[in-house]
Length: 234
Image (cartoon, rainbow, N blue to C red; front, side):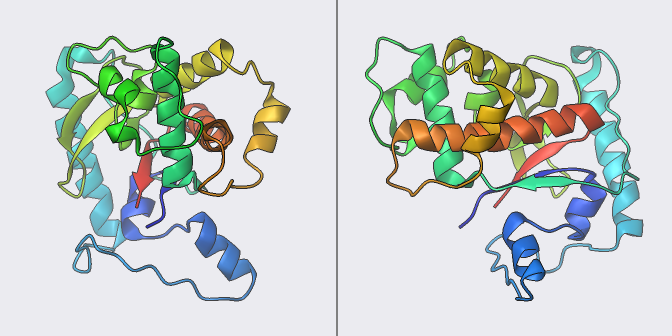
C-alpha cells in the first residue's frame, strides 16, 4: 500500500478530483492507473457541491472545539483550484520519523537501515505520554495538518469521521527546518536533489530519511505559502 501526501482544498480531496504521483505519471504516459481501496469508501459522497458545505460545517465545529487553544478560527480557501501531492512512501516517511527520534535521543545508536519505527526504542521514547519533543509535528503519527499556528497535537474526527491525529502546517514546517539545521544543514538545491529518486527499501536509513524529508519539506512549504491543509493518503 502506497503512502501519498495531499496538500489542497478538502473538497477536491474528498470528491476524488485530484491525482497522486503515480496516477499523474500513468496519465501522462497514456496508461490507466487503478486504486484498490480497503477503506470502505465506495458509498462516499463525491459531489463537490454536497461536500463543500459538509467541509465548512466540520471545520466550524472543529474550530469551536479548539476554542481559545488557537489564536484565530480555522479558515482556508476551499474554492482554491490547485493542489500539490508527493509520495514519500512508508519507508521514506517512516525513516524521517526515525531520524528525528534519534536526533532527540543522541544517546541511542541509530540503526544503519530502516526498521519499523513504531517498534524502535527511540520512537517509543519520543512518543511516550510524558515525552518532550523537538519535532512533535514530524514524529507523533500525525495524519492531518491544519493551516493554523499551534504547537500541540490532538485527536479528533476527520471529515469522513475517521479519528486521526492533527497537527499544524506551520509547526511542521518549523520542525522540518529545525531538523535540517540540527543535522544536515542542507541548502534548498541539495534538498531538491534528495527527492529526485526514491531509494530502494533496503537503502541506508539516512538516504531514506533524506528522501522523505525532501518530499515533506516542499509539501509543508506549499501548505504554508497557500494556507491549505495537508494530509496523508493511503
